[in-house]
Length: 180
Length: 456
Image (cartoon, rainbow over all chains, first blue to last red; front, side):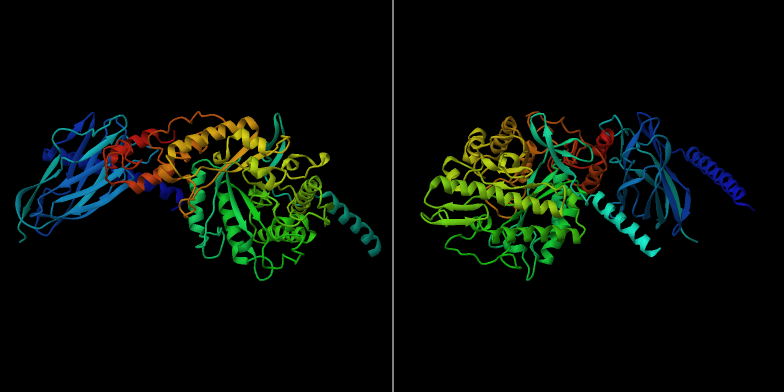
């Protein structure tokens, strides 16, 4: 197989995977009745790869942003959870905001997983994408443990002196059953 | 065949040798402008106005030790030069101090390594260096014994004896050769200054003698005649500066040569001797110095009074105020205003450059004078080119944009680096320039403002 053909196939495959991922994200959103946080057009969503897990299972929660036409320069994202049910293991920055001001910081005792991100100084970011992913481990059973964005979560956008987020913060519920 | 080839090659080599000029390193030169002598950048042909600071370090005995091994620190020098550059300065004046630069034979290698390191760093920041070659090294083979009943040690001996002139010539030649050997960027030497603050010692031989004849490189003089003594000063000063200038030009063609003079007051004129000849061109009996370095301090009277004391009769040679500063008594902001006004006033007298005394005088316990950075850069804020681009006007540069964290009137990657280093810090409102919205924390909302101004 020549190189040109390989590249074409790779591009098609990558595009297909992206479309599937986006479709899956929206499917999860609508199936789980996830709430959004938005003002001035910016929407944040909390998405989970699993809605039901067993104790000991790991799963990924993503924080998704749609800037709604605004140019975002910074995001201070604080994921809150029930630390008696979940253990936050790692935080990984997404690619939407490439400058990492404060790398993932997990405070299990306070049940906060925080990361602070920024755009490149020359490129405030408009559009949508993943801000971060948090890997959780289920440690105790619960019919529906809530993972949500804390009230101190803030988004800065060009032209706005304060956070462009307001109203209820988004969340997602995950059911945890006992391990067999 | 061989013979004819030789006949062809030798003339060719001779022609190449004669036609090809020697290396000219210096980038800054002097020319006649519309109002007299001025500096210009030979690469751009634009007028060059030296604006900078004196930089010196002292040892524990408060002796100048800027480049002494064990005292000079390249990291610190880098930091100083970086800051000077950020403030828009283009010149730094340093002392190559004779008591420290001599080695067992010739110059001290470590010392010269430090000078070369400083030059390389200065060039990287586009700053021109004015080394002041003060005195003659006491060790290293530069001094020869002279009859001290006729010529006192110091400037009297240096200028009035051929032995002194020879020693100084060897010193300046060795200095420049040592820089060449180390590939130091001679193109970023503004000019070599022959002395820091020249003055004859009129209370010492030969001026203290009242009879007899004294033979000097500039002729023989009758010590019983006051007018002849004055002529001896003038003639020998011209002779000394001309010989040393020629020597420097022979090893660094195209370079500039200056000499420094201390602040003159009416009672100090006599002590220092007449200075007027240094301003005069060779064809009129003066020396071939390229420019003049005069030291003015408000302490010694007004600009007009000091200009008068220097007996300036010509503006053909550019004059640089190689030192000006203020005693560190009273309010530094008032002192800064006085120095700014002093600088502006001096423009009326065709001063072509200003070098503040000094950058770190407080930092090295060189007490007695305010330094440029102290009290939150009180002096810099009124003298630095980034704040006052025109040294002859009180007008300040446009206000810095929010996010211009290093005050260089640009919001750029240098500010970005500063911002990143400060992110997350907390304090009182406005505790850091990075706390742009002055809410006591450096956060994404400061960054939001920063991004809004980035590139402006």
